[in-house]
Image (cartoon, rainbow, N blue to C red; front, side, top):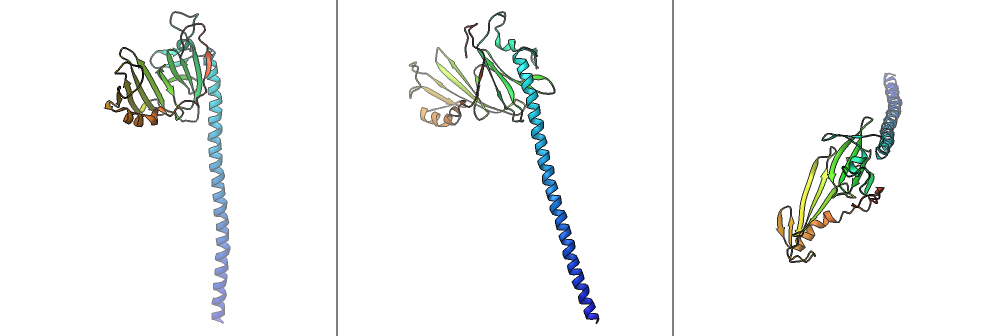
Length: 238
């Protein structure tokens, strides 16, 4: 009789364990689903927040382009669109100027890139205001991969200097590489008789071509520029 009682106890404990296990299993699944929902809501909120921020940023950028507001520069204080697009001392004239929107610092909100025949400014929205995130010369071009390439050509003697640059989220250099060519025979063509430099090292043309191809072949065809001023008021173009 005792043996039967013990057997019944074991069966009760076994089935109780199954019931409790099922209960906790359901709770665990419920908790997991809740965590997924919370995570999805969190990411959705981040995306919504970024989208809202970019929408506000675009309104500020439009106001800046229309000379309605200014942007702050640590070097010279407040600047307006005319400081980038109008020659100093000649307010009736304008450089050829264009602009685009790119998320250069990869924070989810695009910056305003304004480029004239003399200046290249990257303007960022932050805390209901604009500031100059990075100022470059007109020789710089943004590339499809987020990097920048500067190409400067000089004469007498003729030589070309390239600078490939990658910036961090604060606009500081994290990678910078210089390379160039020197038209030694003055024929205006890059040939075997010219001199080639890569990061200050002199080398043959075929080696130079191989090393620089990964930087010069990136291209900028995906960058969609919008013309702000066509330059008809001033004989300067990009």
